[in-house]
Amino acid sequence: MIRSLVFGGLAGTASALLVMTVVGSPFGMVLGYLAPLPLFFAGLTKGVGAAAAAAAAGTLVSAYNGVMPAVTFALLFGLPALWLVRQALLARPAEEASSDAELADGLEWFPPAGLVLRLAGWSGLLFALALLATSGREGGLLGALQPVLQQFFIAMQAVESGGDQAEKLAETAARMMPAVVAVSWLTMLTINGTLAQGLAVLVKQNARPTPHYSALSLPRYLAMGLVAAVVAAILLPAETSFIAVAATAILAFPYFLQGLAVVHVLANKAPASGLILAAFYAALVVASLLVGILVVGLGLIEEWAGFRRRVAGAGTSRESD
Image 1 (cartoon, one colour):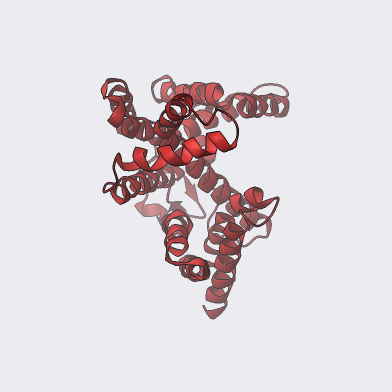
Image 2 (cartoon, one colour; image 1 turned 90 degrees about the vertical axis):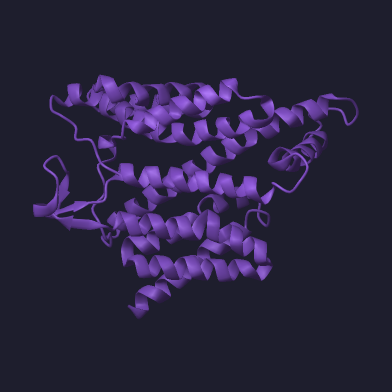
């Protein structure tokens, strides 16, 4: 137990140091992107206690730069990693599992769909906290973002310092910024959690089997929430529609992952599957928005079309959250 806590403390320290490199190194953005990796790795190899020690250590190290960096680390990395690890390590005996559950080592493990939904829920919580923290400012969150973005565009010489162009561009960017940040954060946590599990398996220290990512299946009610968010984004006035836009992005992310699962299943059934997947991800990098929207649409259609079931020739169980 002591070794696990020490390992977690070291992992949390490494995570906090990676966050600090964002502004202190030419490769800071790349290193900072991997900040959640040690947190997940500690938990997925040594258990919840190690994940808690990692979250605590990372927060304490971040406090060296002040209270706000410590709170930011805890909310963005430490606590969500701890929560997700705790859920990921939940399991129950096979005799207590549902009839359509996927079993491994005689246990039914917490499904990846449940992890994705909780990650999206945490993202929504962070957005709500941002709205609350800026509620006392004139213009709220948009009012806080617009001046910063306006100065950024001027500094980058994207617009001239005078005139209305900078103000209009900053206003448009501010409305999209919460959605962009939410998706970026969701992607970062997902990639690092998946990498951590892969590394744990590689060194044969994984505390749970690797989930069947290609079997990711979401509850139907999520689709209704996504449709409602899209309608709200269209109908609400510009001053409040950014909230619905951010909600749309957060609710669409699980369907993006489900769409990726469909792509992988279909590609694996085709000749030269590796080449197909390489071309797909290259297109995703080059045209992120367009391809991303298409993948989300594929994930939504999968809810009713069941492409994976047809390809596999057998039913794909719907995971509970």
